[in-house]
Length: 169
Image 1 (tube, helix red, strand yellow):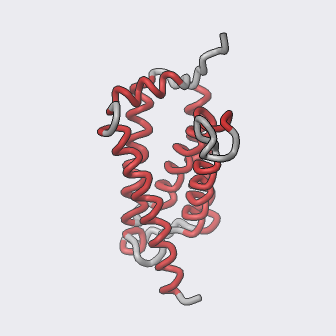
Image 2 (cartoon, rainbow, N blue to C red; image 1 turned 60 degrees about the horizontal axis):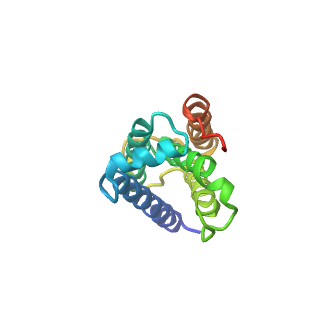
């Protein structure tokens, strides 16, 4: 494999993941029920206060998406993407089974995106990125540790302090 082939593959992964999560954040803010509806939905899953977490998730999705698209601070961006997906997996999808087409949507999609985020964080942004232009080279083990620390650490901290699921009646 040539360097250009690797850089092209990294660019495709970054663009696909970045644009997808950016649009997801945009939709939380401006689509459907807008941010107020997203806040109510988050509260219904036990995220307290719902509106604060709706903003946190939406801004994290937008920022992670921008970072991935432009290849800027890719390991932290991948960590943010991982964190958002892990929170979604635990709070909304895990109880619905594996397949996304199951009622309530299973966890296959968010698990896949989580693993893509780990791969991107480990591989780094590649040469076709702002990270490379600014001589930021956080990949390999350092990129993996950064991605996992932010993604898993953020998930544990957020759920440990703010997730209060409703108890079954």
